[in-house]
Image (cartoon, rainbow over all chains, first blue to last red; front, top):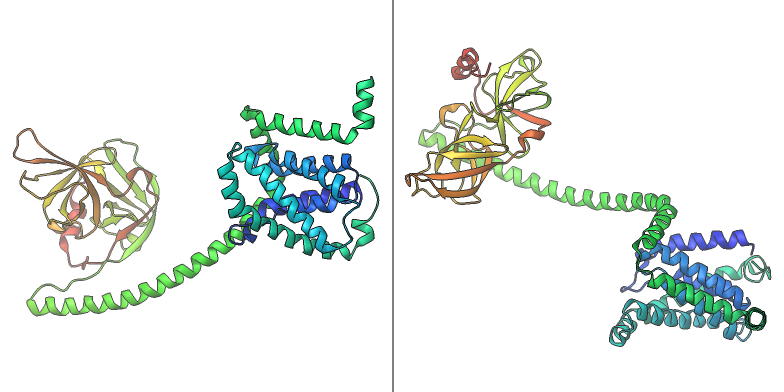
Length: 165
Length: 281
């Protein structure tokens, strides 16, 4: 994937995240499309690139919700690093496992975000986590399944291009 | 140099991660609103076209919903109107049986304000309907919410309307709830005073005043104002009733001239009013 395509994809997903996702809400849960994109981007990347991608996507997401500037940048940098460092290379070529990765990444992201939003109040974090985060993570994972199925149709051009950006 | 080499060659990934984390924390801990405002400005710049497109579609959805609601309302009102028409006919029949005059209903001619008077004590407006539209001197003029004045001069294709906020205009009003009658006079701005109200009479804050129809100049039943203060006068014989007008008289644009409800040609009072010299002229 070229750099321009990646940037375009990031902006398109960002716009979808900010404008359309709230209409896809199911029992208050919303998918985190930026997280799905992050997983798609950083799988099989080196950790440095994964951090930069994670930071950029998170920062872009923060622009859409400027109340906590830096919150998503922090969460996604850490998740990008974690995926590239510990998951890439070990993960079987299977949509199920990739979606599972999105589920875990979404839960981790929720924990970071909830801690920042509640200024590390464990009770608030716990309640919000069980009330919203789990369902949203499952939702994101399901969206991930769809995305990976679509990407499977263009394996060389998008997922496994091997190009660095 | 060794430290830099250690950080950027051996542990590049961890170094970049630490930098990203520090940057994020710095952004989070920045208490300067200008940063957040800048971020909002950037995001709104990026999202403006999408917002416009998205709001267009959401507006369409809202319009569809509103349209549906209005259709339901129109259907309900249609049935209600039919029912009320039957009541009206029944009422007219009963009035006829009792020997009352047959009641008639108002017709309205819409008109637009084309000019306003500049005199602060003599408020009047000119509207774009005149003799050609059947307008006569004395006809009541109403806005969307209630009475605003009456026609005092009629020209070929325009008329002058004397507004309620005029020192030379008094309106006989009726308390819609208690049926107490008083004379409404302008004080200042949108405020009026209801005169000749005895201290024992039942006028309360929040009551609606309607035209009484006495004197046969203005038709009965048009809302005029709302009582917002009732206080005893120093003389202790009457009450001071302050009223706020239903219609904002300084921002009139579209009005309606009441042409129905009366047989205007046979009522010579209005023809006589034609020749009465307008006190403000």
